[in-house]
Image (cartoon, rainbow, N blue to C red; front, side, top):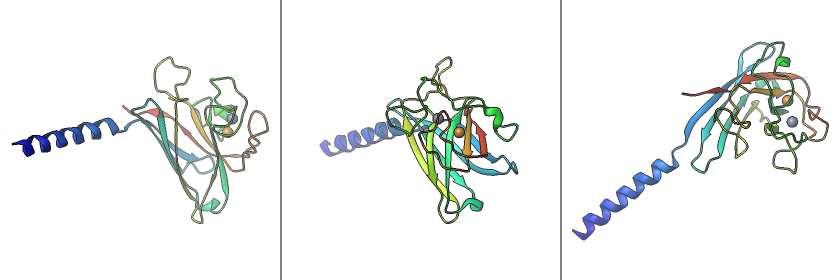
Length: 175
Ligand SMILES: [Cu+2]
Ligand SMILES: [Zn+2]
């Protein structure tokens, strides 16, 4: 009997733990080439139990194998005009452009991402700087994601001198 209760308790706590750890996908974006409009990657956003939002970002650009691209969230969710319609970097905290987790940076300054010999990269970023709450200045829904064909120097204001806009996506809520 004692054993039975112990197993029951273990089973219950395992179930609770798996529920608490379950990440809920709350937003996503398909990244398309600004030149061909073909998909070059994706971003998926998950609400974490600790209040952070996690982004899993994947890029597939064989034509840029063994090079570096730079990624930022831009202000507007409009990829028209070769991504120019997204305008400048999304900057809800009125900080300077910079390197992610340095003293000062825009809340979408993901920065440089090295692509492997197949032009592939997969990164994961978690932060309290993002939310999906209506009316929250940190709300990422409807923002643009730009992939630049150059390297972010993390210094030049307000863009990092990151080169041409080669990819673009819009962050949309997942219901
Ligand atoms: Cu940018
Ligand atoms: Zn920036």
